[in-house]
Length: 141
Image (tube, rainbow, N blue to C red; front, side, top):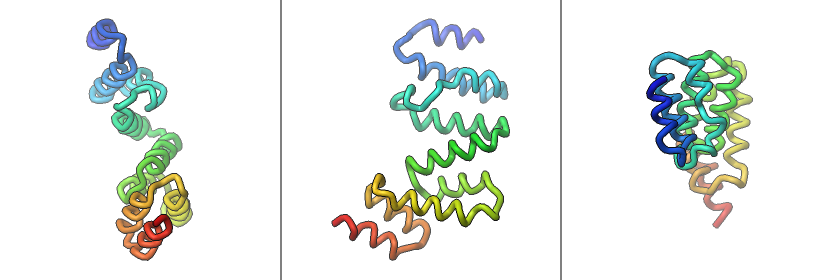
C-alpha cells in the first residue's frame, strides 16, 4: 500500500501507467482482487503501454478463473495481432468441440480488410496455408 501511495502521489502525468505498475505488483504478490481493482479500465488509457496492459489483464483474468472474460480478452488480442500463438491461447479457453468454429471465425477475421496483406500472409504461412497466404498478397498488388 505504501508503494501505491508513493507512486500515485509523486507524478500525476501518467497515472494510468502507474496504476498499471501497482496492479502488476499486486498480481505478483497474489493479491488478485486488489490488482484487478487497480488495473486501468482500458489499454487505451495506458498509451504506449497497451500491450503490457493486455498481458496484465489476461494474467489476472486467468488467475481469477474468469473464463468468459479471458476468452474475450484473448479474442481481442488475436484481432489486434493475428498469429498462431494468439490463436492457440484463445482456443485453450474453449472445449475442443468448439475449436473448428473458432478457427473459422479467426480465418474470417484475418481475411477482413482491416489487416494488411503482410499480416494476413504471415498468419496463413504460420498455419501452413501457403495458397491463401499468396492470395492475400496478390489480391492487393
